[in-house]
Image (cartoon, rainbow, N blue to C red):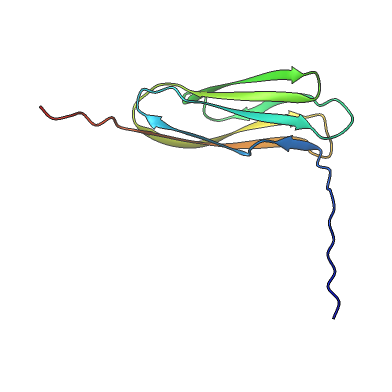
Amino acid sequence: MVHLEVKAFVKVPIYLSSRYVNLRGKEGQSITRVIEIRAGLDKPLTLSPSQFNLEEKLTYTVKEIEKGRIFKIRFTSIPGPPQTYRGFLKLKTNYPEKPVINIMIRGRFLKVKKGSG
């Protein structure tokens, strides 16, 4: 019997700080979350929004921090009634190795309980 251990560094074309965004709070609150996207290859990365299905629930902005290398996507919930929702943001890239980035979004805003009296 032989024990074989292999360690390797796998270079991915695009690094995401998270593939999921969770927005949790109370009704009427505005919550913000940020995801960082980094180019993993030696060529510049470009991002362009493709699909977004939560227009009435939250907003997002794409900010290029370092030209062609680092981007920050800022998601901010729109204050509203108690609700739960799920959706996504799809971004097109110029990398054939990873042509689409899909970020899943979940929101949960609970009713504010009023005190008695």
